[in-house]
Image 1 (tube, rainbow, N blue to C red):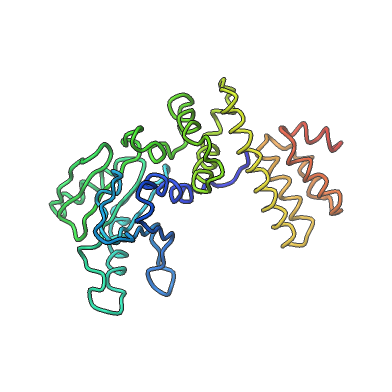
Image 2: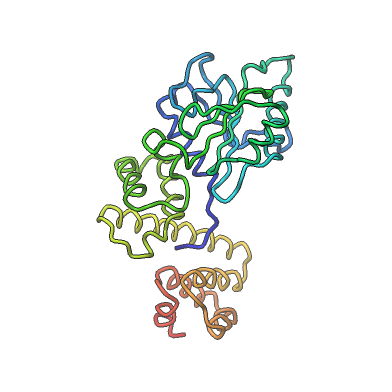
Length: 305
């Protein structure tokens, strides 16, 4: 699998809209919303198009007019500092207007979304603010006694029936209970950019299921092969662009080695040979071979190195 950082936030943006798609006509999603003229961004701001209209989805029941969303990927955690940062940003959103209380404080909510229950943060809020914490839906906790109505959404506690996508935005999915369920939901929606973005990330994050050789149905094999090819092409375009920008043979050589490193151990001699090559035509040919290779050995055989 192509060794690129997993962009959890991009998939979250897509899945958030998937989860709330039954209310999409009345909601506006503003990604990385600038709170001021200078970069001061929150993950997502969800704005109701029609004031007062209720949102049906469980993660949106708390919503008012302006809804600040803070998301943490599976490897991160929600800290006390995150709490103050987001509350501060929400205060900036309320106050940074032309007229006083143009955005009323009662029209704001805050949502913290993470994969694990933030026990330390919840304990702090209870001790510091005597906050009340109530689980109103599986994995969805309302926190009372704070400046703004607040909810904490714990992904690994969400209903896998109600929150099919958000509950599975992680890298340790099971084949039958998770990936096959998502593949079924994904069927017929592969042209939808939201579903495609979500599935791209989830497949990449769970590539081990495919690499371990676990028996899968034809549909899943095709899905993983399709996403792998797409990742290769995206990586190829990025690497070529980087090499072109550098205008040097070293850029293409480094791109070749970056791909080979993911396929397996690259012998020191092969690494030196690739780095010493200065002929751009040869390097470009090697690059094409690297992209199509499944192992370092295949690459060496096809290049004669």
